[in-house]
Image (cartoon, rainbow, N blue to C red; front, side, top):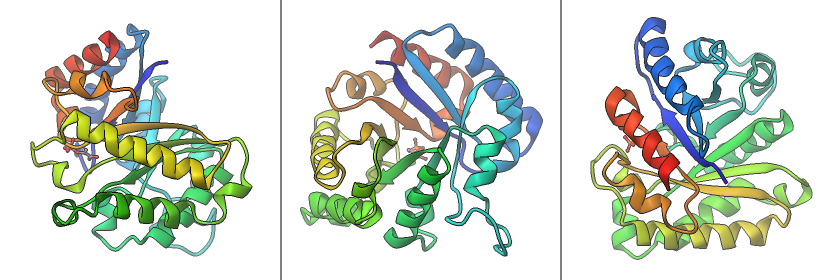
Length: 246
Ligand code: PEP
């Protein structure tokens, strides 16, 4: 199976030209690599820039209604009609801005209803890790987001990104064995909620060209969500090559 590598540009770069430049080089590289599925997650306003190059994209978020009086929100239906394949939901940077598990659950349903593949982000804070609460936090995030609706849906695809919050943007990645154990827990908990899900789990949190291989050789880790390093052309080109070599 191909390794899924998602480049989360966050709120960067500032222009379509810079986005195009970054993605052109990644796209050319990724097209030559048989064992990698490369997905770019740019700011909304640059999605078309990437789709027009024939590459796959992830939106960084979506709203939970398809249309209506919701100024400033982005419709999952509009994303699907634009040709978007994936949508990141519940990133910790959005949870920090007030997004709750209940909202995340509604967004997940909206993504699935519109045929988008959700990339559900879960992970614990440093304090929760130190208090030995990692599994309790993951269980709560999964059960609240997938709630009692997911078991009624058949045959949908789900990507879960295990992103320990203490590892995001800090340069302190999780130990691969530790991440692999957390992912096994995520897999088992999700299967208790949904029986027929086609699911993979990817790791996110200070991934770079030096540590990526250590994650991808683990049995439960099917790819990576890469933030900061995805804006560094040479580093990210190496990341794609490494993902292809595992
Ligand atoms: C992210 O934005 O999801 C992320 C993992 O960021 P970074 O790679 O910079 O830690």
